[in-house]
Image 1 (cartoon, rainbow, N blue to C red):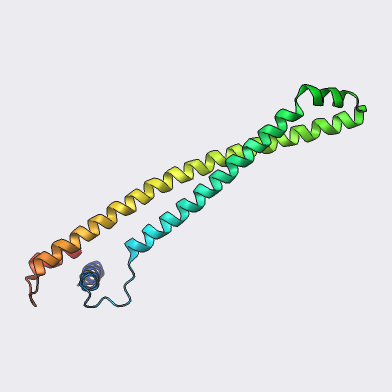
Image 2 (cartoon, one colour):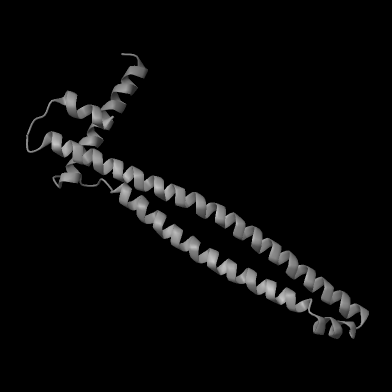
Length: 162
């Protein structure tokens, strides 16, 4: 056989063996060492979504605080106090205000980026959930097909492992 055919046969055999191991794990009669990837992926997505939600809350609070401080720095009573400062002190104050405004801009950009990531991860989590349901449905179909029989026609079962 040519190497491509051998590779294809080995790939098909590996899929069949994996399918049998996954089925055995789902009926509780084997599958040792086969991780429950759908549950692991779902758990990781939930964990990351929670962490990102916390980070978004934190950065939102930080942006609000920056905004309040900058608003105070531009308030009339403070402007009167700044007017009484020397030229050098006013310049230093202006530099500090500019720096805070730049930091606020940076935090808002970070928040926007995190929101995009969060939205993408929510879509991924939905997709993982759909894949998990599809996998469970396929295992249920196989359980119904196999039942308690010790032997089943390979033409009915093996194509499901591909």
